[in-house]
Image (cartoon, rainbow, N blue to C red; front, top):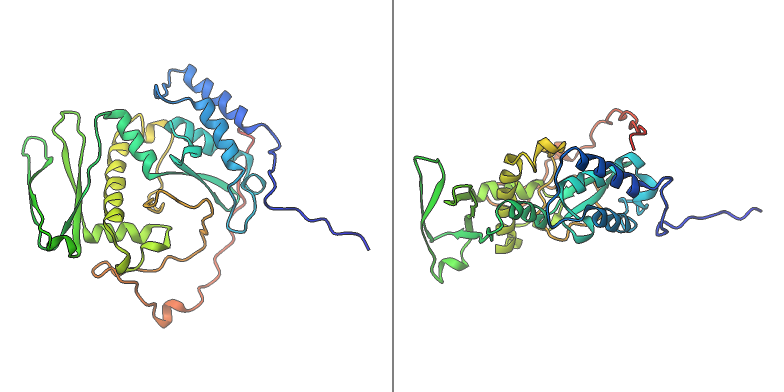
Length: 294
């Protein structure tokens, strides 16, 4: 009887072509057209380091990303990373397997890094607003920006539930803009998150609230800055989950169904009988076009 061969999913799988070198060549060509990289960023090192990091990335079934992802999607994700000035090996972004595609998600720290490259002196200091706090702000008529007038807390209010939070975003005029999120907005962001640890009211803490606010505020600046937003060929997926953790797992089950949250109370909703019924089978997705672009 012939011995059945087995393959370990932990083995490093070498791509058919030297994808890292191909991406470096493409970035070199981009820079030759006048595209500028951040002064503190070495894209050659970042691409090489991220290729090594990719050896540890697996899909939800434990298969190596280099074995299941198309070469074109790997190259595209690394190219996007380089044009953003990020490094997956430093957790400034995450390489995530979705089907046979490798995708790039910016991390919380990666977003702060991008904003600080525009406003080097900005150090985000988010604050949580709780029941019983005295919180006042005003709108500046000439700019439309919000300005913090007063935020007072007491020892008693510090133990109460949060009702919102804020961070002062940097502006070109140096005035700053008070970015505020209500509790309902924060809970909605958590409902989009791929992480399951944010789903019960008892687990809300100040770190989670403040990171969500900073993450959302950074998105506004990044999307409004041509050198960081859509002009470099990257368009943020509006349906992508909010990145709240700084430890986003490399394995994400994209078929997992998110648990619904009551946006008023923060509690996990119990599905009805109709909602728990098996859904109708979805039509088969068309085959990915793995063109030889690289």
